[in-house]
Image (tube, rainbow, N blue to C red; front, top):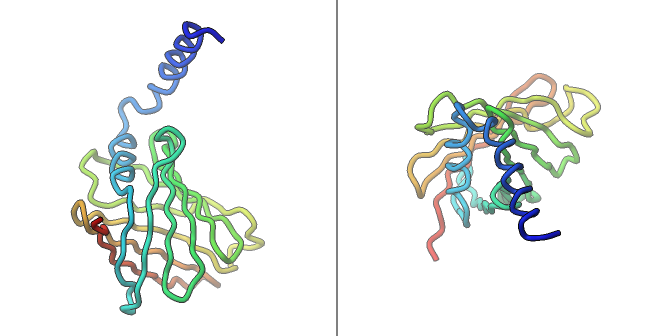
Length: 167
């Protein structure tokens, strides 16, 4: 493919994607997620150590989080823009993949509250799964993640206080 054709294709792709971002707050929210790139450490709600890593992927179109709570296998969450919102897919050691979404109502993002939209590999809604995530941005170096585990219609919060790791 010639350089000219490639440039034209990239311009066309950008012009198609632009209306999805126009007039929404999802772009500001996604930039906030991208700004988390790097290593974080802290404690869970029981004072046990926890760590996470955020990595921007796929030419800036996705953010991958790898959360490692104490005594548990790591969990991977992929975040991406979804029209006027931000969507996530959470890959859980329990072998299900909850999908959640938030529609930000401002460019001044202090918190993102993701709501359950469905799940892959979940035989019934009463089976244990991550059902909600609140990601609170305290400042550029401090966040709080509150994951809500739902099983048999009971919700159990999993709290993580995290600080950006300095190199």
